[in-house]
Image (cartoon, rainbow, N blue to C red; front, top):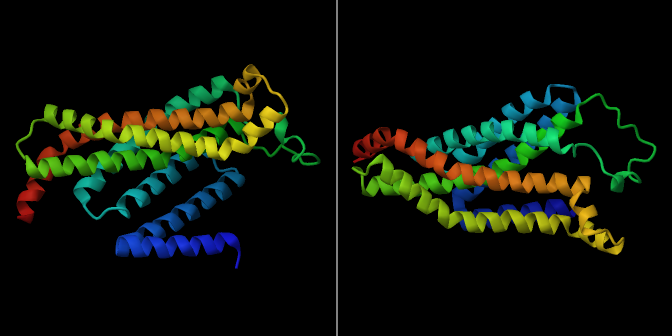
Length: 257
């Protein structure tokens, strides 16, 4: 048994023990998302347009993550709509940023690993960079959308006569409570994954300016900053969609009673 298989089994057991049936469903969603990501890589390798793969795979991953993570459709539908809108906005933003930053492809630090290999694979590295950046933001977007939507669903359940302006205010208040922890999670995830390269930079006495202009470093920073922007956009957009769906949600509460 490999180390990854053993850790996967431990993760599955703990998710079932802690979350029960929902934990098992979440573990299945994790496996499905991994499968869709692998399928996306295969499609891009066979020269299917990367942007088309990004939109299709991103939509599927968001649907699996959100709808398999919660049974309440009042929450999940709102979160899904908000996530799709944010993904579309980020796609337009990232295309411009990646084109302007010009950090797609490999950096000088990769030259030894690529020695003897051809990088002329017939695929636009810019489009691959856009795909990578978008897919890396989906988890943070879905998490923020679910947190805000779930909180506002409870608010509507307790106060069905609340106005749209008050829904927006409550959504921003809920978002303010989760933004800090989400940002820290994203930042320390980036720092932990990049720690080895930081040590290498220090050992080779890279200057601060060299690090800030390093292709690998800038590419990773774009991913993190894009995730930050995605979370910030998700909060008001989720609250806005919840306000639009207020009547439908309140009517469903009345039917359940």
